[in-house]
Image 1 (cartoon, helix red, strand yellow):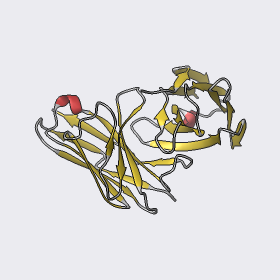
Image 2: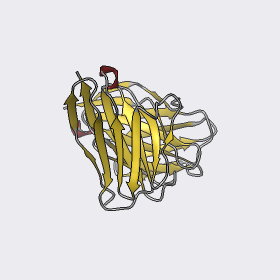
Image 3: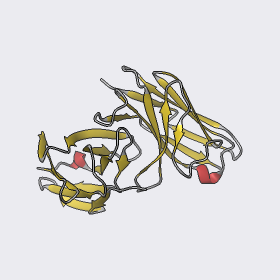
Image 4: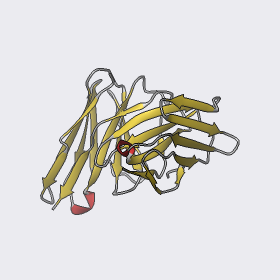
Length: 117
Length: 110
């Protein structure tokens, strides 16, 4: 159980394009989802916490207008990288948590590798 | 900022040997978790240890937690080539936000 599906797994696009990444909890309802960014051989950097039915909470230094997050249902959160540039190239990973509490494990999607040319 | 620092950053061992990796953190926590990441994939939860627990086992995994030293260790016994991955600790200082450590890249040679 507790499967999280992330789509697409890989995106290659031109500079200036907006890219949408979907994160779905397949067999449970997730009131809270998290979006991370990971650089090669580095740890995960939390970008934002996505709350169903309300605005996302962004971490310091993360541009809200650049990384749009929508959590319209209990099973779907989306991250849109607007007007992407080469420096936005990275590995983006989402996770979802049962109950939204820190005493439960996070369940991760398989990540999206974004390459901006 | 990442509060978890893992040691070593990279570890290479022979199949059958034990692998030990350590995690240190800075603030008080509710629990600490260990995750595994295969190259280019998402993270998989391995084990959760609560702040009032000192040791926990799961199969070939053994996790210890020393809250007085703000440190945890993950021991993988009788390692296999399939254990090759990056391992991250994650601390939960508050109610829901996780802070991931810098990770240990483990390579198990067949």
